[in-house]
Length: 366
Image (cartoon, rainbow, N blue to C red; front, side, top):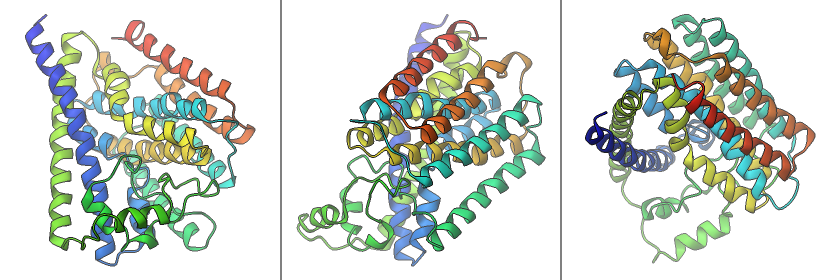
C-alpha cells in the first residue's frame, strides 16, 4: 500500500468537503439575492433552492466525468440513507418531546416513499438507462411545478430558501434581508418546508444593527454566485478523484465508499440542521429537510447518472442489501410521520445507521 498517496488523498478529501460546503453556501445564498433583484418569483427561488443537494450533485457530475459511475450512484444512495437514519434520527433524539407532524409533512413523506419505491424497482431490475433517467428528471420537473402550483393555490407552504440557513450567513446576504422579506415566510410548526428558524423581526433587527449598510450592487452577487459555482465544481472534482484513489488503496469498491464515507461527509449540514431543529421543537422542519433532499437525490441526481450511461463494473455495483436499506429507511420515515414519533424511534434509526456502516465496511466492502 502506498501510504503517502493514501494520506495525501485523505487530506485532499477533507479539504474538498470544506470547499464543497463553502461553495454550496455561496451559490445558494447569492442565487436567492440575484433572483430577488431580477424580480423572479420568490416561490420559484424557494423551489429551486429548498432541499437542493448541490453538494451531492457536484460530486455526481464530477464522478461521471471521471468514469466512476458506481461512486456517483453510491453517493446518492448513501446520502438518502444518511439523511434518514443519520440526520432525521438525530432530530428526533434532540426533540424535547414527541415531534408532531402536520398534513404537509405527511404528503411529502408519502411522495418520498413513492419516489424511493420507483427507484428501487428500476435499480433492482437494472432498468436505470437513458430512457428511465430522462423520466426521473422529468419527474423532478413535475415535482417542482406541482409544488409551485400547490403554493400558489395556498394548499402548501413555500419551502425554505437555503440548504445552509442553519449556518451564520455572510454579511453580504445579511445586507439583502430587508429587500427580500417576501421570499422568507415566518417559521412555524405549520410550515414544515421552512428550515430557517429565525423570525422576520430577528432578521430585520440583525440587518439594521449592521450599521444600516446599503445593499451591494447586482454584479457583486453575480460574481459571488460564479465563485460558489466554481468552488462546487472544484470540490466535486477533488472529492471524486481522492475518493476513488482512497477506495482503491483500501481495496474498497467505489459504491461502498460512496455509500459510506462520501455520503456521510456531504450530509453533515443536514445533520446539523436536524439537531438544531430538534432542540427547537420543530419536527416539521426535520421532515422537510429529509424529504426535500431525498426527492432531489432520487430524481434529478439518479436521473443524471442514468442518462450519462456510464459503465457499472460487475464487481463494483450495489447489492440487494443497499437497495433494501434505502427502501426501509424511507418506509421508516413514512411510518414515523404518520404514526407519531418518539426519541426511541430516533435511537432505533441511529442504531440502524451504525449497523449499516459496519455491514458495508465488513460484509459488503467489495
